Amino acid sequence: MESFGKQLRTLREKRKMTVNQLATYSGVSAAGISRIENGKRGVPKPATIKKLAEALKIPYEELMKKAGYIETVQETRAPYGTSCQLIEKAEMYQLNDLSLLEHENWQYLSKEDLVLLDKYFTFLSAEAKKRTNEE
Image 1 (cartoon, rainbow, N blue to C red):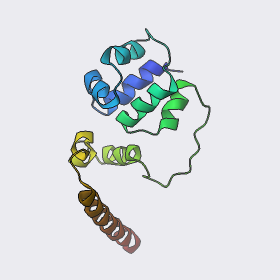
Image 2 (cartoon, rainbow, N blue to C red; image 1 turned 180 degrees about the vertical axis):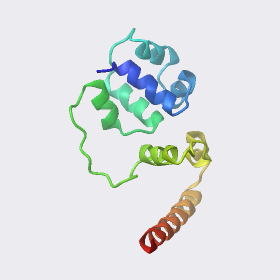
Image 3 (cartoon, rainbow, N blue to C red; image 1 turned 30 degrees about the vertical axis):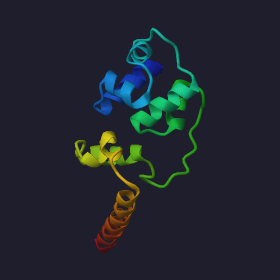
Image 4 (cartoon, rainbow, N blue to C red; image 1 turned 135 degrees about the vertical axis):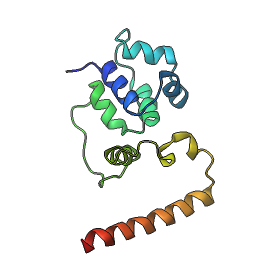
């Protein structure tokens, strides 16, 4: 089984993030992340794993499993229920560079922007469902 550090590096690179970007988004030092990835530091504490999971946009439980803290992850979410799953869907269609997936773009959205985005997403989802049912 691959070490936690190697798995962390793979996840970070899959998200096209540098160590410094992950450090900025997570609040974990770049040196600490580098030590974890290079096997010079063991598995971090759950609080650190939570910060890394949020910055990588993956479920906390998934990263806790990779770290060896838990053995199984309960699958109770609907498909594409998390931003991680949305990213995976975008990658499947080779749409990795959508501004929608850029973490830093979300910080500028107001409450009203989020409500409008939710309404538009609901509309798009309903239209996609109609098209799928028509096929």
